[in-house]
Image (cartoon, rainbow, N blue to C red; front, side, top):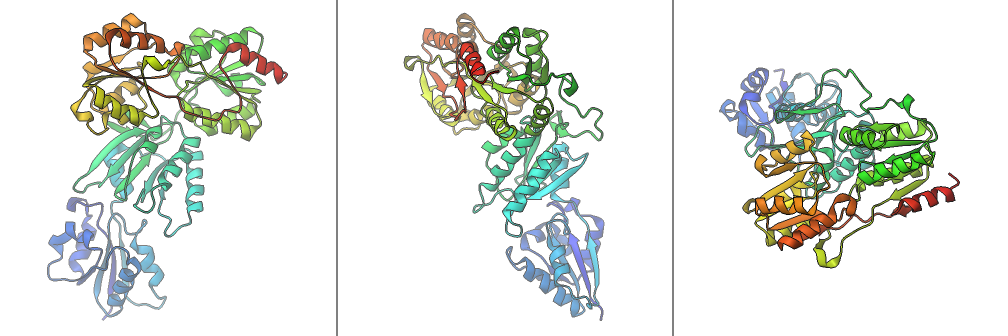
Length: 511
């Protein structure tokens, strides 16, 4: 009797996502071979069948068992979750088959993890995308990194499978950092755990938030591209791209052999204006359109290159326009962009100069915390109505810290819609959000905190240009504990803290 081997996909987890052809193949099969977890959601179709469930690590044994049953004339269903032909059992079955085997083979497709997770997030895979497994059991890690780097450089949307296990914790963070080398930190991403199974969780984050998160083997990460957008609690990638140049200034409008001032701060813009006033050709690079608008306002006549750019886009424009010096005047806590600029300086052979506003913190003004996590834990200990003057990037660290649910949180954010939406998505009431551009006076801070009945304030050592002294004075006047997150510690090739020192270093370089 001629046997049949059905390679059956049973989708992500719920019975209603198993395709009708898979149901028919299961009903017609006499022998079922599967990992036992997969049988839970197809149990109604298994009555009276011969069932074999070799454990999770015995995939090849499962394939060989199914083949032997089919060779003996059985009608066999070898089962896999998701789609059996994608990171699953079908390839093992074909490896173990003999060319002269006579049993019939049917491959039944199913809903993949990528499909399932994308549907829960919205429509992030509507244009070109890639999938990448982070398990190095069957593929060398060097290959995984190389493929991840190509995906990032091409700015493809992608789905990361087999994200993290007990014995493989660091690989995902390496891949996420590789993504950040070429993709914008603001790229929209989704994290899905147990898609279409009990305990399902779905959340949306920016790419630069993911390295601070924990995952497991039940997690799938979906990373968008530069065009991926957020709307109504979902993310989607447009089917067509009408404008591939997402920076505000066209490359051919930018001068060659200019000083590139990477700004986004008021003093960074002042430095750019000072350099331009002394006759230097200057380009200001800002990470957001809001920053670009501020640069155009405060530095009229100076070209601005603004947009959500990854390191590869920066590399190309700096090389094409033959940048003369990279002046890093970004925020004291923008360590990611500073690290990227240092790397670009070395790769392109362009001098790098860091301008960092001086610290204005004094020991008596507040308690210094070495990390955001330490500040979150300390704030929960000290206060019940806690004000965060730390920006939007690290909100999740505070709001998801142990004990955070028993506290009330208040924030002040730059009035960017995505920053406000991020706070709302994290559960902050709109009445606890102050969306205004600083810096702010001591009186304004004191009035706001008094009105909100704040009993603990968390800020950063942002210097006078960032309004630090006004916050410290207001906290002192109200007798409120002030927690200060210390600045990131980076080894800058050249660092200055005054405009005169910047000019002296340029002269030393004969620029």
